[in-house]
Length: 424
Image 1 (cartoon, rainbow, N blue to C red):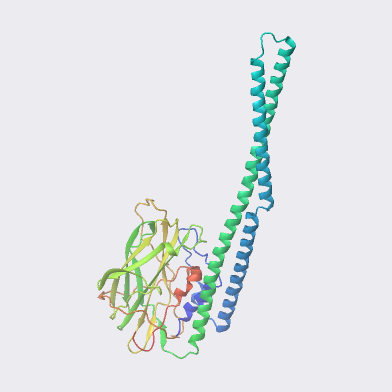
Image 2: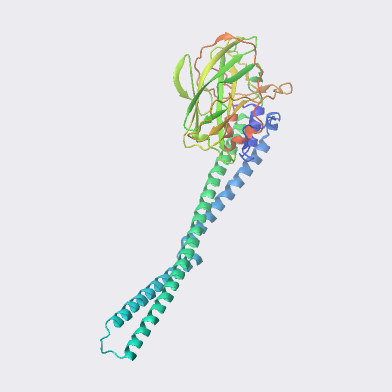
């Protein structure tokens, strides 16, 4: 099994670089990533990438262990802040008791004054009044002491709770980092395993074909979370030869506004066609059923639907499209690049008003320096889409800059597969 050199390189790059290249600006950089023009990585390079990914994962595991230990420490009754909080609570309770006693003393002193007999001497009246005054002063002092003790208890409890919350948050971040590192490690290991499985350079030749074009229309440049939008994908055979089987490819990638957090699990891509009107989810290799055949100059239209969960935060997205072809005589090829159509994700309930359609990168492909590629692999499930009409070839649009390595742990989608020697 072989994968395209220009795309295999992107896989290797993706697992060794941060998945953070979707920016907070409305559109992505237009420069073409170097990964598309480099040669296929060697086994040694992939082994190095896998080793780096493993080291990152191992570090993440150790960091998570340390975060768990730290959390256990701060949750312990013997942690300094927990001890201080407990002491403050005890002091507050004691101050409350002292105030209660002082308040009762005032009540008793007042009762003594009120119940003096008419025969009481001036000396007895003065003594009772003095005792009441002193009791009130003591009660006021006790009240202030209780207020101070309560404030100290609140402060101590807040400090303890803040420390515990921070420890929980740190553990959560460490667990997330471990999960992402494991995904990257898995991707790197898979890329290495696939490269080793490929072995030598034997296999059928697959060539880049810029005249096999994939063009998206009707995809809004802003999509509101919690809504569905329909758009069209047109696949055109701009060559002068029939392509026996064409496999359309589509992938949607999204992040929040920071560009640091991937939200791919909140965006969903489906398709349907004249021969398959029921909505189907794009498969896990990001292919749709085959167009069989696609004649010279003809095109096929595929209805697409993008759904964004209502829980998705405001952010940025890009829909990639491409196509591969396979002929009965064993020849094969496809788009030398992926086209990326960028869009903004607006928070649920937003009303962006009328928006323009998403536009692809305007960078022209550089295919003159691409060598013939060879390789074989399992084909996605075949089907049949209606191919009608004809149109002039549409220029292939280059992948939005940096987006290929923005896939991170999910970068294996770039390993668009070559067919086997026989039909699937």
